[in-house]
Length: 286
Ligand SMILES: C[S@@+](CC[C@H](N)C(=O)[O-])C[C@H]1O[C@@H](n2cnc3c(N)ncnc32)[C@H](O)[C@@H]1O
Image (cartoon, rainbow, N blue to C red; front, side):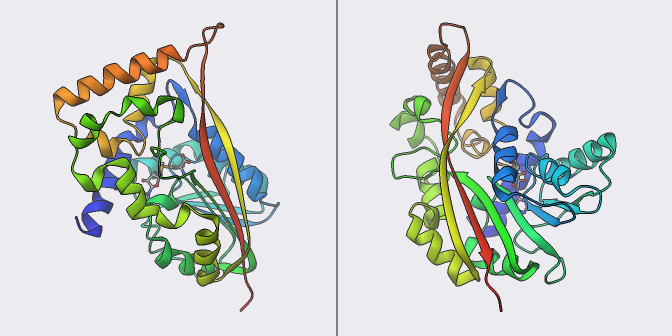
């Protein structure tokens, strides 16, 4: 699979997912984006770029923080995500929000146009070694970079809370072409995010310093097993679902519903933790 084929599939997956993305049945990206914005701490009047902004989970909290004198620009490769951000910005009267259809690997902005670049669960889809130096150039010296990703380990299944990982049996995984199997895809795209030393080395090479890594469990609130399955089709796992033969897809659906329902507590609520890694850095001076 070449890079443009991969990018096209990612764009199509999120374009189709946009209408219901994080809006039904499962609370995850929205609180996580808010948390990233809190850690990045945009200040009034600052100019913020959100790469792979989706429906604005991090962009809107950032826009509120920078206020009317600031600028909050979201870029995404999925047209329906960009449309959704524009609609919400207009509805909320947030004139400081702009959204553009743009490949985050080739951001078309002037050098030093931003004080802060954020990316909530989006850097994982990008060729980091190439894009991070471009983000450094978009920032003023001392400008900040803040992004989040799944907390990758050799065992963890990206986009799947540890409590539910057992639903992916070897047989189900084997039914998908190797390059789209979650652990293999994660290693290929995100190998630099597994070890803190690799993260620091990659960021230093791109022109960043003062690297800080914050690992936290993000609580995921799930309405029901069926809702979790529907939600899993709207995020990165969609790239896995698309390859599953119908029989295996039915099997995985059944296993997921059962596992999620088994996690219901005495109050009837389903809450599972998703380990998330937040990375903060500053652009070093020229
Ligand atoms: C998991 S979603 C996260 C969206 C949002 N940041 C959030 O936290 O809800 C990943 C987003 O990255 C976008 N994306 C992936 N590759 C991209 C690229 N090359 N350029 C721009 N956006 C991209 C997808 O379209 C999708 O909206």
